Length: 220
Ligand code: PMT
Image 1 (cartoon, protein in one colour):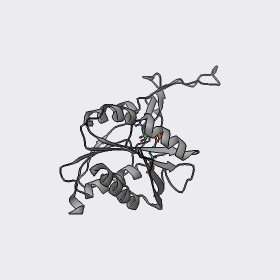
Image 2 (cartoon, rainbow, N blue to C red):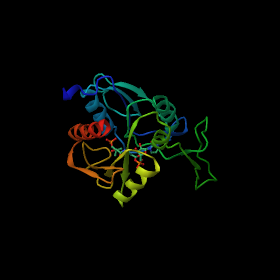
Image 3 (cartoon, rainbow, N blue to C red):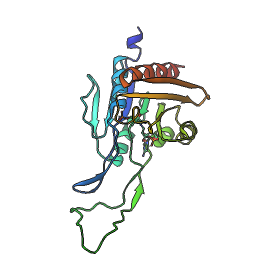
Image 4 (cartoon, rainbow, N blue to C red):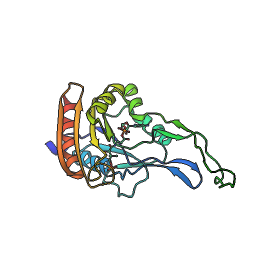
């Protein structure tokens, strides 16, 4: 039965943005809505998998039957995800902040009369996908690549650097697809050098197509 071919299998999905706090009232984030990741979670649940969704702050309902864990920062997402390295499939859809403020101010930062240019020092966050690619225990690792130029080239570099089995690339310079829209257009690239392209479509429909391709590759 095709619909239930993932019964007993565990799938980890990250989704949404992260928030990197500067002080109790301010943070750095991005435009990710979580729609792509939530659609993928729903698609894998419909295929019978046990799905754990590690989610940044989004305004979406949890797909039926999916186990959702809410996190805020890249650090928290990393801590949570690192507990699931023995899962069968991992899909890293989240738009994780690459940098976070180096220091957190316990009190609200004040505007001062003598400071016109305020510099905020940022430090690198842990690359969760890269960590998974190098530390998993038998996981089929799928990352995303959000680019605004040289999409294919950068995505191929991410495939290698992060030791992923597949990278799903999308062009986020086109505001009608990608971040915070209902549609997307993606190309899945594999280690073998093969590409699988899906034309612009609703994220729900695309997620089902993406799940189908991942499942058949993983089963090989
Ligand atoms: O949420 P939506 O509004 O539906 O939009 C969907 C999306 C555009 C966010 C999604 O399709 C997408 O492209 N997600 C990845 C966004 C991203 O941060 O891409 P990146 O090229 O910067 O990162 C590459 C990969 O490394 C991604 O799988 C990312 O999850 C992962 N990463 C990045 C940094 C980090 N510190 N840890 C990570 O795991």
